[in-house]
Image 1 (cartoon, rainbow, N blue to C red):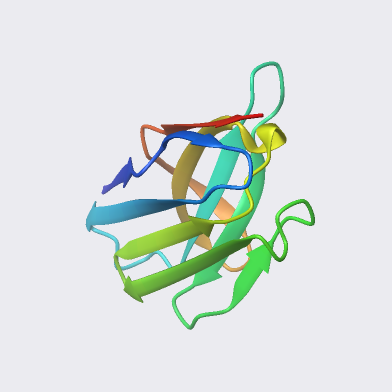
Image 2 (tube, rainbow, N blue to C red):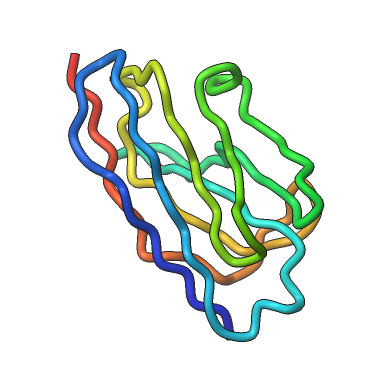
Length: 117
């Protein structure tokens, strides 16, 4: 079992920044990557960014150049979001997975990010 806990969401004006954190605990030895997804109302959940245990990264085209995924150890991952836009408004979820990027069934509870115009 893997437990994931996100934090760092909130309300920010367009052009502002937020940093999300995801802390993993439990039996995470089999997990080789972590991903950030988001889901806006009425839309499908989409992959925003992912990072492997070796530091390889992947980004959605819509966030390239604005978002940065990083990790400080094997169990904590961050998503630095700069130049936020209203269309970035969504619930952001952390996922523990494989490669770049295959999700597992391990999800965090989600954190709301709201960008006002």
